[in-house]
Amino acid sequence: MTLTPVAPLPEHEVRVRAPGKINLSLRVGPRDEDGYHPLSTVFQAVGVFEEVVATPSETFELTVSGPQAEVVPTDDGNLALQAARLLAERVGIDTGVHLHVVKDVPVAGGMAGGSADAAAALVACDALWRTGLSRDDLLDLAASLGSDVPFSLTGHTAVGSGRGHLLTPALTRGEFHWAFAVQHRGLSTPAVYRAFDELHGHDIPAEPDAEADVPLMQALRAGDARALGAALHNDLQTAALELDPGLAEPLAVAEDAGALGVIVSGSGPTVAALARSRQHALVLAAAFTASGVADRVLTAAGPVAGARVVSATD
Ligand code: C5P
Image (cartoon, rainbow, N blue to C red; front, side, top):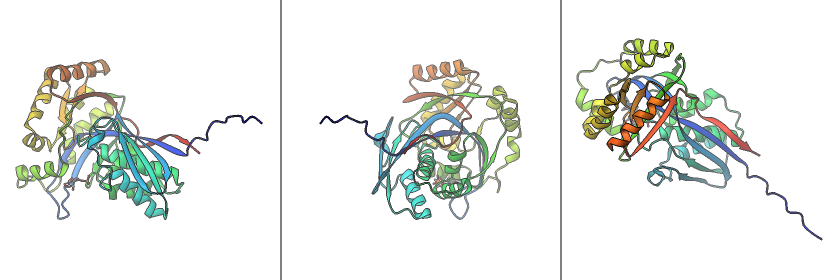
């Protein structure tokens, strides 16, 4: 008797992609008793992606590949693992999951890579376990994991208030093109907020001024990159520069290369430069590379969608 070889059944897996973000505007109020700062921010999701592949497992395990994979924690400190455990608890799942994270968003770079992993893990496990939770349920779980996780779920462009977790979609026209100067040294978000408190603790208004972003919102609605460049704003930038003075270099290089605007992304240290076009983004990236002011250089367009299943096998 001869045996006909058959292809092995594909392992049940769910593959999810989630984007990194930049803050087109980040306005910070005084620290609350809970240790958080009230924010008024405008997020944009950009085309630099994390991928999370979820497969069934008895235990909760995480592996990582991609740039800087070696500095990503794979224990319970990892936000993607925390997301999977939280969802399992919420819906009463008593098995584990293996999450494989393919990183591309800079680690500790101010682009919410860890939050993107957590959002992707929620969406992947939700599909794997067929939980039947609503989008709002997932958003609640996301907010309990971290301030930026809800935005990683929703993507596109949105105004964030509260800790940054309360989102209102923003109208935008067309695409904006960005170049990023990435530093492997990273910056700690709590440390940047502490430096912000020391620098500005006594002279900031009780509420961040959302009205100040009217020109920015108009620029987004009109698809006017030049006006957007002029309206970019980051209250954490001085604090990030205080902790990492070397960031002045990529900021200056982008300005010299004709960026329409340039800011530190979120709590840094990634520097985001707004280009006139896709080609100009490549020119800005080349300027970062040539001047040696970045460990890694990326280009991307935004806005893009939030965490989405890209493939699933049964
Ligand atoms: O919410 P998440 O865990 O991402 O926040 C990390 C840290 O950043 C917080 O512990 C806090 O120190 C700081 N943070 C803040 N105000 C915010 C968001 C974050 O002070 N709105």
